[in-house]
Image (tube, rainbow, N blue to C red):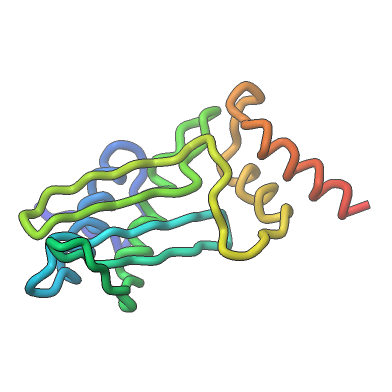
Length: 154
């Protein structure tokens, strides 16, 4: 039996596994000969994502990678699958995939993502509506962004 992610979106642990593997495989396929690893940094909110990827040689030199849509689409689905009621989901992620196939991932659930450009606080409200958090799981910076959005709406 094979799983198809093109039909209904998967959630929970099964979805996490499928989308994690999709993201890792997509990144692995982008490692050119002569490189040690690829790194994907992605910041994500409902309706807004920012991502960059670089391949890294053994000497530490890096090259930008352009065609990362398959990987970022899988990572967006992973973010949705990783939502836990009351706890939320991650805001940013760092994927590191080596030429040997090893995968390291660091998820950020609590710190404000470092955006290249200022983000409209309404996007944080929309994200919190889609991925609700219990009050004790809403970081102080996120509370401030929600208040900013409410103030702008007045």
